Length: 419
Image (cartoon, rainbow, N blue to C red; front, side, top):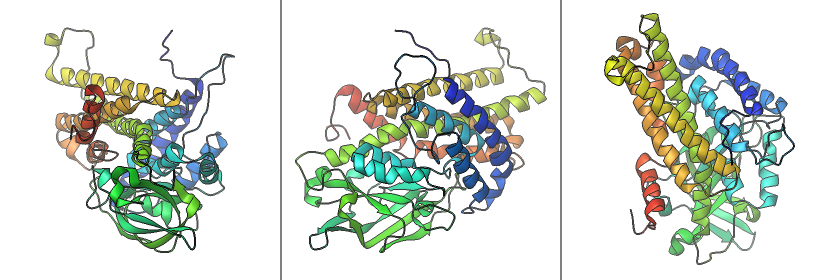
């Protein structure tokens, strides 16, 4: 078996196009939308929707079963590998912008992980519509953050109408506003709401429900003001007697003595945590490249190949940052390769997320530290990248939670045995 680290042609071509977008559309207005939080860069959204449809990737960032075209041999999908490369490049441009790139996001990932073939056909097809479309996942609650099994949102089946009636409140919903609010310029999006159909059943009672935009009883009650990723909306969503069609439940509508509902949530994270890691590493790469550019302007060249004790402190720092960045990216590649090849990747997924969270934070912080006033000044985007970086370690499972997942996988403990 040979291992080939050459970037497949479809991915390389896509990266070239996205780098142009990042440089000419994202970087040029990064500061504007960082300072005007909750503003919507419609030009970017509409351009990306049109461009990605024309490129054959659907109308946004949604995993596909795309395979390399060159060669006659049978090859595995590169859908997640391509998506990771897309996300890394867009986040290099501006991570807040990346988060408002049209597509399914976490909402589509939940449908893919736990939905039936009919549900996938119904809900995922809309990302190829004429208008840009968004989807989001609603899991976190005030009393259920990292412990997703503590969710209190309730879904009750109305036998007379065969509808689910959902009550609860979800917080920190990334992209919740664009996924649910019916903007004239957007297609009909949806949110995926995690709720319990039987609180006495614990994790076995957890299910995900597709709640389409405009559903009565659902409202955006707040948009958060944040440290970073300010171009992206983060919403609080309230559900009061919200009625959802019976067929919109992802997975079995009855409670079995298993944890299949909870496993559906975890399968979603197994697919998306490496993508969050890729996003963070795009931010880290931007910071590192800016640092090296400014050092070069000031006559500081990194002398590769010398013994470590012959290097200056700054040279050692830069080389260490490069090592961290490249090693973290290899972990992402392994996790998404496993996803494309339908291999269980819970361990690799969480490991890549942990490593990327650490690396992104350390690289951006060290870049600010080395450049001093230049790094701290709002004249440049580095201070913004420093603020944007920390979210990598927080959403889609905090660093602490992912360390627990890694430990359980390696040591063979259950969640109850190692908390």
